[in-house]
Length: 381
Image (cartoon, rainbow, N blue to C red; front, side, top):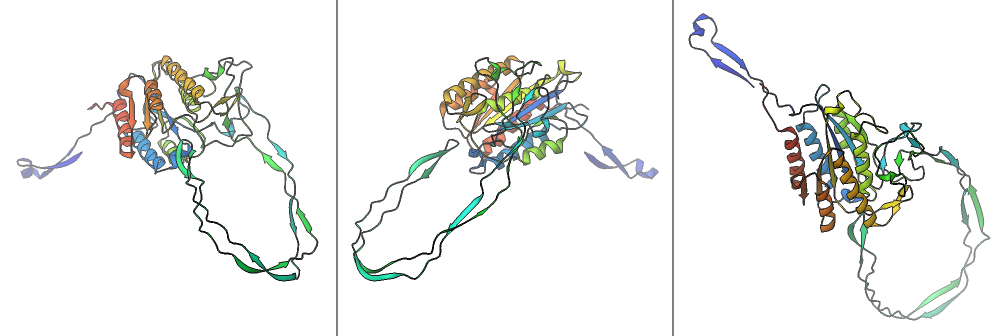
């Protein structure tokens, strides 16, 4: 703050005004650095009712409140998740990853069959009876990533009268088929990640120990959203990643939790947390989701449909993350299912670290409260 003071005595000596500068700083109170993982639901349901726009505002406000700078103590990772997590194709070749080589798949030519209509013959008048009335069929309820919407059904149709109409025999030339060759389809890995073995419990192990059990990249799966951003002090990169988020695909919360945890763990696959001061680094994971698990793990893939299996793994991962001395804050955004809310609530480190945000304003307030709890402003001078 700056101000000017009108002097009294000093005015006689050529100093009628005295400028005053006051500086106050509010750094995060911590005995060391702070690493924060933003684990953000970017599934299809987040594209409804401007939910994603609200999330972007709230998350960027949180980043702003934490005063992220290149020489500051705060580092943030952004982990968008839906059915899968995207680690980025640039990681191909790293020791912890196994993924098939890209390849080209031949495609059948695109063919079109046509025939020319010739002159109609044998035209005559014919009686066509009317149709009885057809009742309406009400639409049924369908779901898109857990969000209900109306689908199907048909309108009522009144009865129609019979009438005479002209009918003819239609004549056509022989069919002619023309084909256009198509280039080979390129099958490319885009960074989409599956999960390790369920039976061996490796789908709950955060690190890669250098052994044979590598983390599987899925070359055939395209249901990946934006690439993750590992821990960073680059404020523009963090806010840019948040701005780039788009809502698509289904919900598998364990994928987000696992890679959020990995972004805070100093071991492979993500090693940005492996710093000289890691022993005194405070680790925080913030999970925001707007819906229940709609997918589960099946083999190394996430194409299963068992909500109970996915919920069980979600709860187990939450426990392991907290046991790793990571502070967990959770936000249930517009979730009507009580069981899912309870699961998200139990994931938090304590009851006051869970936020039940029923609307846009409540979501913004939840992120603001988390920011306040992390900052706990103190004046340094």
